[in-house]
Image 1 (cartoon, rainbow, N blue to C red):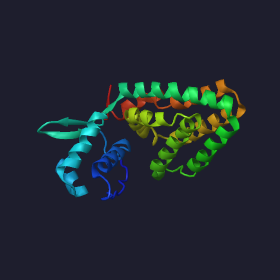
Image 2 (cartoon, helix red, strand yellow):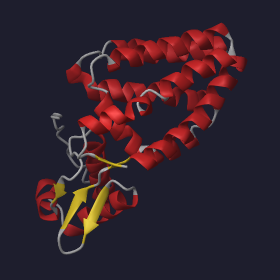
Image 3 (tube, rainbow, N blue to C red):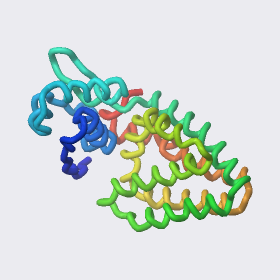
Image 4 (tube, rainbow, N blue to C red):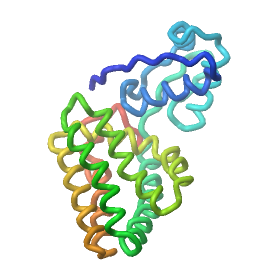
Length: 230
């Protein structure tokens, strides 16, 4: 699986450790750095032209998030995708987003549908394999819109932090034939359900959408056995 690595430049007017953390996290979540990739501290220091301290601090945070494993005196490697953690993250998202879509469909169906439609129109323009990164970001924007409109945007950060393993599973799923088209179809169905003003219909459409990746977890594990931990 090959992903084009983006070039990043550190802003020297700000603390560099958080920037390095964000860069490395992005590479791991995008599968640019797949599981078992060795992270050389010396190489990272050279790449970012920094001392060992900010690199060490960034790797500590990644370890806390479960994205890397540190073997003292040996190496730091990108952790495998934790299926159990992915299932828990999925449960968290279901709990929040189903209630959010239910409430919004009852209280502001037209406004919510219009806000989601604006994101969908942008996402439809990125339907190409070389646009996975942008397509995936817009997918997150689609769901973030729900958090924003229902007034729980503070929970978005929590959900994103808890979804790192699920995000990597989704990234393995996204290039599979028909997956991007299925995401768009699901988003259209959600918008139509919200616009209809029927909360149960909207909840059903969202539940189907959020369960897509986990519904084929066995296939993903079969295709990428070295990437996952069950």
